[in-house]
Length: 220
Ligand code: 5RP
Image (cartoon, rainbow, N blue to C red; front, side):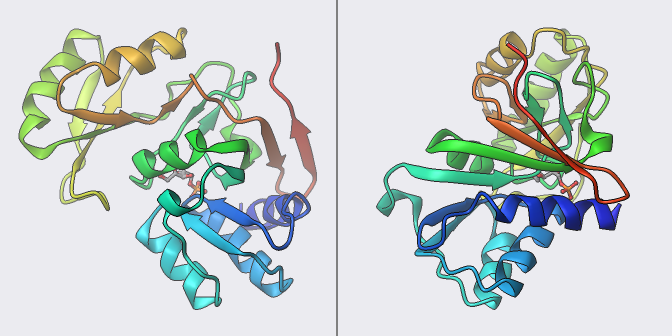
């Protein structure tokens, strides 16, 4: 798996324009990407990071972390995923950074998703869907999730970088990701959910264990 992550991280470097401000996601694949950026000495005007962990890793390599509010629209955002379908709709948030990830993706003109090829699925939903909630709303949101047909599980001991909690939803059959994304977002107390359907990735770079990388564009 490590070889696949390194290969896809290297492939993503080809898409980065030196001297620009880059949006950078979170997770082990993105960590490989950050390390590859640094080892190839790619200079950036700065980076907008989707988590404290990503900020720390970028800073350790000498990159400046910028506040999204002072950057305007970003040209490019690079992030991983827990699942991707052929339309490049995603489940994200395995690491709990989904809300900031969604904000940066929304504020970016182009979103390149990087992953090993185990993440490509026909139908999203085998990976449990993370939902970030305001802490006092946790039980209420969980009851609403049950009404939608899934089994909610509180991610014990996890606080997001925003000070909120995560409910992992098991057993959703996600044949209509767009509708489910907005239905969950409309539950009071939900901050955001890990479905990236309204704004999917623009490009998916997938690598196998032998380091062969393929590029997938969304099926119309
Ligand atoms: C974090 C994420 C990550 O992108 C996702 O969990 C994939 O991580 P990894 O590259 O470690 O498999 O959404 O919130």
